[in-house]
Length: 549
Image (tube, rainbow, N blue to C red; front, side, top):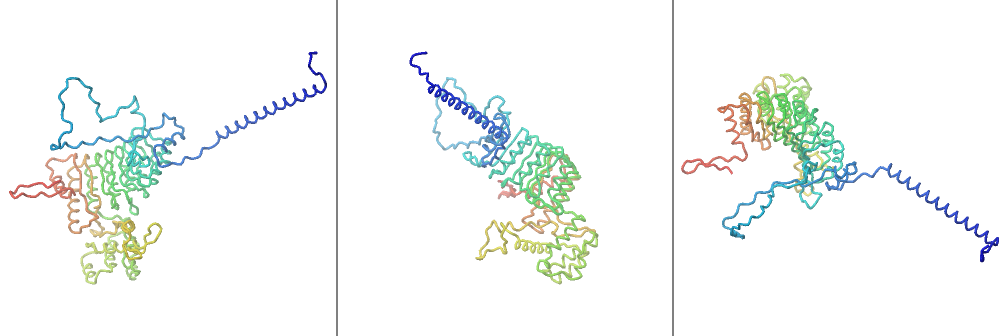
């Protein structure tokens, strides 16, 4: 036994206890490590199964779009970049000859210097030009929340990208223009986009070009809840099928698009059938101002339909019935004042088929219901013929009563307005008063009975019509010439500041003879209708001088 080692039973017992304590600590440590590992494994499983919280857009398009793409599973290299849209450099002002040149020309130096690079283009890395990107325009490039226009050109927009746009577009407060060119839209993606547009508070301009869709669901963009003002659908291979849907979206007997003022359908495949459908959709529409059907397949037949639309046309049976309802519900001054029609008129006001007799009795009833008419006028109207009204006083006075009633009952921001003045007697703010008066329905205009049909003035709200580069010949030109002459005559007899008629008409590049008399007359008449036209003045010597600006 070594010297100095105590071999007593007490020491042996202490060594045994210390060994057990040490083994217990090792066991406890192993259990703790095992518990920690199981906890971390459960946490990792929870992280995999846990649904990430939805992203709340901030209104800054670039970071919102990038984050939504990352959450959708796109790699950083696959996310389209958001760039400022390049602008054409402005024209420098002409040099002032009187100003002194601060940098006088130096003497020519023979040393060849490197020519500076032009500033009209931007160089990019290899293949970077073909990488998808989103071009934007901003009010202030230093403020990311001021995006006003979004341009997507030359890459496919799929369902995932539409879902991203659905989240971020409505939060861009100043967005007013969206331009999609050659983006491979389908029926589903177009309808999904159309559902997003009404959610954007200030979106007014939509350009979808170079996106032919076999189903042609273009009417979904122009629903009754649409706030779009300018719509361009060029190069979409729109046929008569698509034109028919657009016609129904423009207006029917009972509905009308109340916001769209400019529609561009040029460079499509619309024939006379589609032109007739669009003309039908404009019969009851008095909102659209500019229409372009250039570079289509319209011939004389389609041009004649537009000539009829712009001059005057007979009402169909469905339109006559709707007009009768409007006159019964809104257009009668007696009803507006609380008076009931005489028993004889009440018997005649029942719905009946739109026959010759019905139309004539209807016009006689219009004259009798005008409470401002005198007995002499009633007697004179009865002697005029078969009851056709040739004056506009009846529908004008009835319309004023309708608008006055609508002004009284219309609500503004949930508060009912009872008069056009406030409690203190002052005028109401401009934002509340004018917007409350709606446009008069065309069916309430004055009518004229011709051979048993009721005729109303045509569409005079369209001020710009483009029919260039079609197949319109001499017969179509004569029909359009008569329409222009009719509008000018009607404007002189009964001027209406809201219905001025055509001011600009494009008929170039049609198969028209160079010596066409109708075409020359149209050109002469439209020259004076152009708002920028200034008559030529004669000098004291008798020479003609142009005053065009």
